[in-house]
Length: 165
Image 1 (cartoon, rainbow, N blue to C red):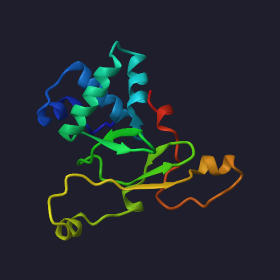
Image 2 (cartoon, rainbow, N blue to C red):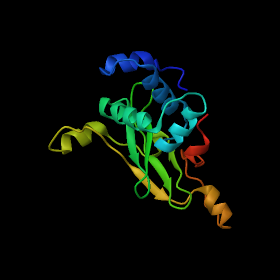
Image 3 (cartoon, rainbow, N blue to C red):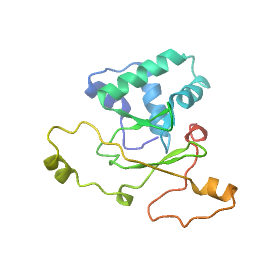
């Protein structure tokens, strides 16, 4: 969980307001080091609370609409959820493994984007930006007997579903 974030204050300042279930879902998203699927978030919460699946999905939709959480496209019809960019969480790209389906955060320095130049170049207001690099993670390359040199600033991909506690 992010030590810098005050999730109760974030909920209140977003206009959503605090409820115990909203806080639980936001904390579950924030405690993960990589974006997680709604199913993984639900499974993690289900271990310690009586929250139901529909409630988790509805809260995730509210958190996305309020700008606290971002919905990231995985492969196919899968979506992953991570904390939206903020003062404690800089904007960054993601790496998606086409074999195991993991989605991991890349360091902000690995794929820099000049937001000022981008805003000047586009004809409207930017409300979101997602960059996803697709490929094969080191773990899958090793499993296939192939190897690739890790790129600077790229973390070792791990399936998000195994990281939620």
